Length: 257
Image (cartoon, rainbow, N blue to C red; front, side, top):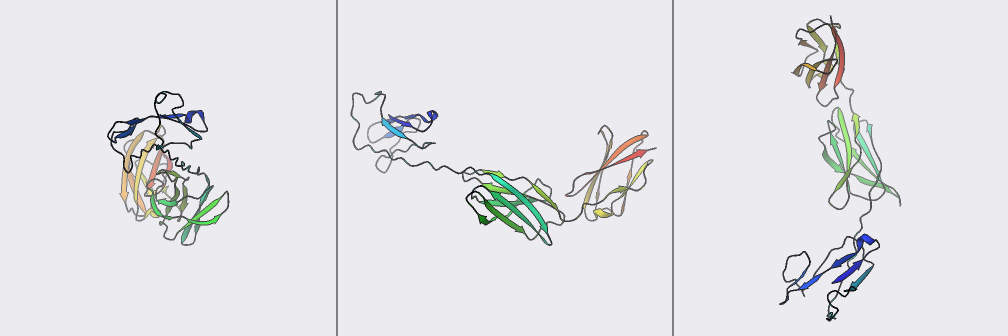
């Protein structure tokens, strides 16, 4: 029995070693079996030990003898630094976007990009540009940004198989499409100006002012003007929601006579 202590009371650990005879050794909780070479047993600690005692409670060897050949090797615990994100930002330039990440310590960092702020993919490893005792600055140039929306985030390797992520920064390479209802108030048909959405898929949704859906439509690569036939509606105020690929929804209120 070996008693191991650390700097904190919660580190107090007792390790029981078993000799099953015939060169078969084990530690409590482990499967039995010969340990080679030289019947070496290992036991991993989650803390750095401050003292190691042999059966200090006199529970197992008070009437026996501890073999002088018994050796305990203390392997220092690797303590990973706590990674903190000091800042993350992205800036648009003519033809490319630059992302900058500032950490309190060195860490492998990957830049990820998404067209919608959700489906991120890695586009490259961020490069260390400057270093002080308290700050490590990494950058990455996206030389082939998406045509319209670019959402960026940094994925930081903590060194233990897990990751932390920065906040998301969105850059619009081109202005969002502008939609407008041509005639408002309306009667039985909505006429929507969709000339800015050439080459995109668009989803239309009509709601009453209590957010209850009335109808939904979609259009692929619409022309300059898109017509939406409405069901019979009571006079009042309604809302048209328009969502183009890779864009935030746009809401337009309209009136039924």
